[in-house]
Length: 123
Image (cartoon, rainbow, N blue to C red; front, side):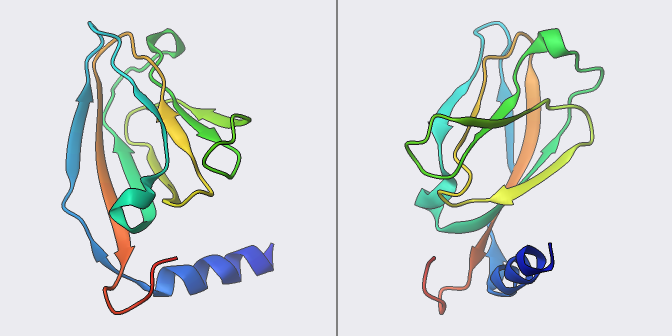
C-alpha cells in the first residue's frame, strides 16, 4: 500500500553510494550454490541482481530463495528463477535473508549493492 511505498522512498533517499558490479558464475558441474545469508556485512541497504541466463528451465535449478524476515528464519517466502534479463531488487538487510539453491548448469548474474552514505548511520 501507500505506507510501504512511502517507507521505501524514505529509505532509498539515504542511498548515495554503490559498490562496483560483481559478475558471478555458479558452476553447474559442481552444483554451485551460496548458503543462506543477509547482505548486511557490506553495509548495503539494497541489493540489485540482473540475471544473464538465456533459455533457463526449471530443471536447471539455481533459484534464489528468499526467506521471511529475520536472519535465522527458515520459513521460505519465495523462490525466484534466474531467467535472462530479470532484474531483482530487495532490501539488503535482515528483512530478506536469501540463498542460491544448487544449479545444474552454469548460472550467471551481475550484482550491485547500494549503500547509505558514510555520513548517515547504518540501519
